[in-house]
Length: 157
Image (tube, rainbow, N blue to C red):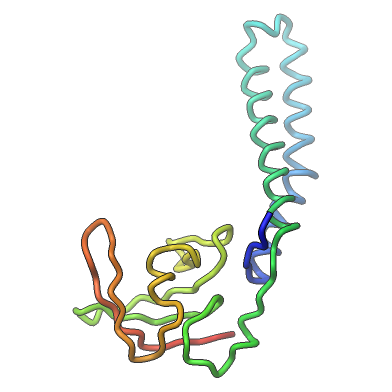
């Protein structure tokens, strides 16, 4: 597996989820399966089927988390402090043609959350911003059409 760029906070969040799935979720599921088995005939036992499905999902997610964490390449945005060119880890303030501003944080795909302003480095908007500087205008194509943004601020923390 290729290296996956991530921030330290992103890796820590995945490690926390992995610990919870192993130490809490897994035992809860095992208990639910045992309880469902006690109800008798497994072929017509919806609780048993649901618990097994939940177990399958949890184990799959554990494997995925382990793979991502082992392939993570932690990039410290603080090493770019003072830079004005957008790179991985940048916090970028952009403004559209109507001067509506948005703050974005460019992170790895496994730590992105658009609702919180964390966008994946593989997203169209991040790809359009990478390599640009304060004052540059970029045109981002979206399903709604092309939108132009001006880069107002670039911060590395």
